[in-house]
Length: 102
Image 1 (cartoon, one colour):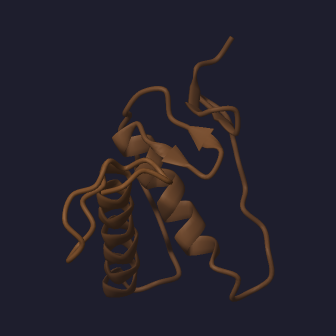
Image 2 (spheres, rainbow, N blue to C red):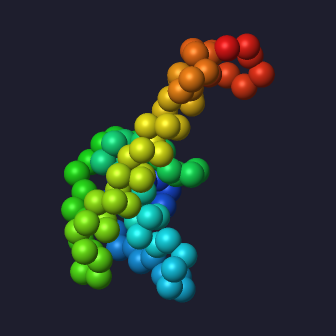
């Protein structure tokens, strides 16, 4: 059995294709998948069992556009980590559990 890169969606030595109409943020999804695999993280309901290297190739967009989108993703990941840990900017430190006082 092939190991999962992003279980159960993407397996090692597999092939995947994102297809959707123009303008529905396929690039953001692809970069988010790459980020989850590189960090051994979680994306939506999929998880990367361990961190693995990723080569991302895009022949359409300028490097500056990809860098800006990746920066958005990384900023969002940092914000999510702060929220899950209870460290909310300007809000002090909480337990990180819904319904429990901070």
